[in-house]
Amino acid sequence: MLIRSAVRSWDVLKVELTMPPNDQNPFVSVLARQQAFNRRTRDNVEEFAPHRRRVTAEIVKAAGLADGCVAVLGAGNANDLDLPVLAHAFKEVHLADLDLEALEEVAGRYPDLDGVVRRHGGVDLSGVAARLDRLSETPQDDEIDELVAAAASVRLPDVGFAYGVVASTCLLTQLMNSAVAAVGEGHPRLIEVLEAIRTGHLRLLADLTAAGGTALLFTDVASSDDVPEIATAPESVLPALVARLSLEKRFFLGVDPNQLEKQLRGDPYIAPRVTSVRRLGFWRWRISKARTFLVYAVAFQC
Ligand SMILES: C[S@@+](CC[C@H](N)C(=O)[O-])C[C@H]1O[C@@H](n2cnc3c(N)ncnc32)[C@H](O)[C@@H]1O
Image (cartoon, rainbow, N blue to C red):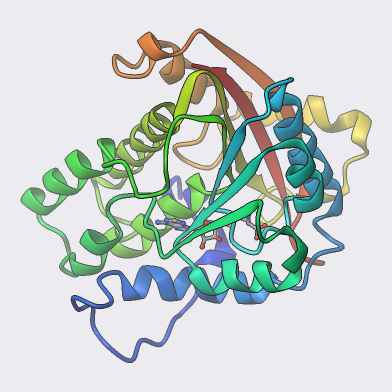
């Protein structure tokens, strides 16, 4: 089924919740799902190595000669970041994530980087996590209307702004998966919700980036669960595989690279703030022994 391709199977975790959302824990089930994911992948440092090198290299390239600050959205376990390299390239490295526990664990691994690496834990970068936790089991039209409006115009989270470089590291599909879990895979308006989340995320990247700075979006777009060749194809065949997936429209729903770039160039809020959009390419991200993602990256200059 079409919608299923939006859902990365490792995310559909059955999380046992001990309490409903409340004022102290407004997005308890969204957080519990992300924490479960981060705990499961925390030790997969070796598997992440080639992906980590590529992500880090693209962020460092974007730093240019400026001695600026970088914000990484969805930093989690930071297994996709070479933090010592980033700390060398930037004056400050800001890591933002919903999962405070994961960021604290990262800080424990790099005590020497304490002055350079700043953590923003417990921050909802979707702007709708609490709303997702409060949705009824079968959300009605008025709930979906409100969700779509809120998702498309994320309020600036408390993570600072005007960064020279802002990088979203495979966060977008996680934001979407939280929505899939709450709205329901079979809901007739799910696609609208996912598109609103994409819009909100791209706008947030533009808002956090300084004039003259660079926003980088890294996102997984397909999985070896659905397309086994993603894990097995020789490197030389990867471009042809990407072309075939694009032609057959087999990317995860809502993150088709052509749609993303079209939106960056045409969205009435983003386009006037963006001076150039550059596709950085596709590569593999081996997340565990059993699963590999195809990752796509795009850079836009603000
Ligand atoms: C796939 S992981 C990215 C990989 C991560 N950079 C690493 O190396 O472990 C996505 C991250 O997004 C975070 N996340 C998911 N939903 C979020 C939200 N609403 N706000 C902020 N962070 C969120 C998760 O906690 C997770 O750490």
